[in-house]
Image (cartoon, rainbow, N blue to C red):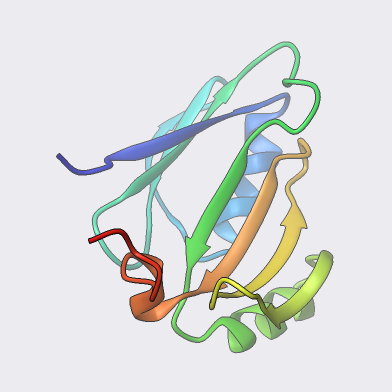
Length: 125
């Protein structure tokens, strides 16, 4: 089994589409104004956005995008006007992460974990 895609809700799919294009995602399905799907620049995963009348309340959705050059990516996005809630920093769980929110309040974590993503020192044998 492999994870194919994640779909998130949005009040304005057109604005959300432009926001996520900034990350370098490639638009592959355009059914605006109700739905879009992207390919990630690396790997085989896809990411989609669908129109809703109301976004979930509370903690909602967290989206993780991994990049081998995290600090460069954060710098590039900041130069394009993307605002981060926390800069890239090393975490106790051996990942380097930067946090932000999209236009609908979905939590985005840009990270670099390398081998520790699936093989941390505390992995169950």
